[in-house]
Amino acid sequence: MKLALIRRQFSATGGAELYLQRLLTALTAAGHETHLFAEKWQGQAKGVELHAIHTHGSRAERPLRFAEEVSKALQLTSFDCVFSLERTLTQDVYRAGDGLHRVWLQRRKQFATWWKRPLTGFGAFHRNMLALEAQTFDPANTRHIIVNSEMVHDEIARCFPAFPNDRIHLVRNGVDVNRFQGADRNAARRRFGLKDDDFALLFVGSGWERKGLPWLLQFMTEHQDDPRLKLLVVTRDRMRGKVPPNVILTGPLSDVENAYAAADLLTFLPIYEPCSNVVTEALATGIPAITTIFNGASELIESGVNGHVIDDPRDFAALGQCVNHWRTRTHAGPVPTRPPLDLDTNVQLTLHVLELAAAS
Image (cartoon, rainbow, N blue to C red; front, top):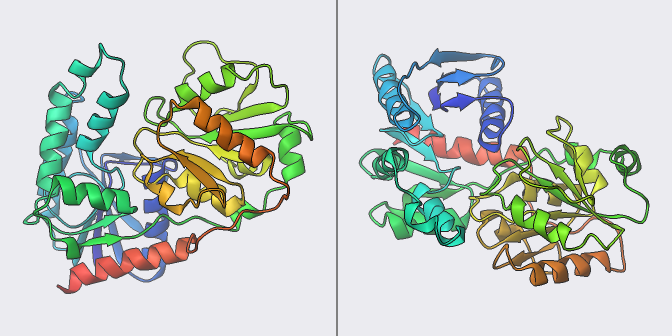
């Protein structure tokens, strides 16, 4: 097949970017002709023809300008299938990996301080994003949609009921299982300054407000009197305010598998996350995960078996009970997971949807 793939900014980091990188590699290896349309990229996608999309304007205007310019560029040649990872004007397949902007705004308003709520969602940027989203989820403009969680599937059904249910396909995130099972735990714990009897929580992610890091830091501040409870924070975000001494900041890591190996429990408390890769990575490592009902990856969690799901990231009592459950468990060893978590399954299911779109 001759395939066009769209991602506004293509880089070596980020969940959607890593997903696209893996998919491009698999498509090229399978003999498909792949074209990537992007505003900018880092690194070279081997075997992929890159098409630069030049856009101008303010932050509010650029998503719409990109959608318009990529639409013009696609008209210059024909493709068997156009696969977009962005909210664009027309495409054969759209992957809703970023979830719904309107639901994200609802969550922001829900968790914002009272004086910020009236202003949440106002401004040209949000108006443009909502307009693009409506265009994308119009069944006349998009033939098939890939979601990575039932949560996002239900959000589409609720917010865009005109989109046919049989054209929405669930393809869960995949992970390189071998990578997350091959790190040396003892060496990793020494690297991050953890003692043998420390119980290490782990946070991985960027996006201060969305990923819930402020509440996790507040939780650790309230537990400074517990000398053996530690939190590893892997993020490129700039810290705001004082960081408690029981928090270990690693900065961004290219070998993040070592942070998982060092940790005992993933604590990831987003207010909106379509389906976080970090939960999948933790389960692949064999450590349990605590997350919220606002994370599509919570569908992978069986309470008390491989983690816990809490209703409110601000509920420190519930979080503390969940942490203590895993801290006092009588047996060590990997927690069970529900397959498939592997990359090959993810790629093959995605290819199936692209082939379905190309054939129809």
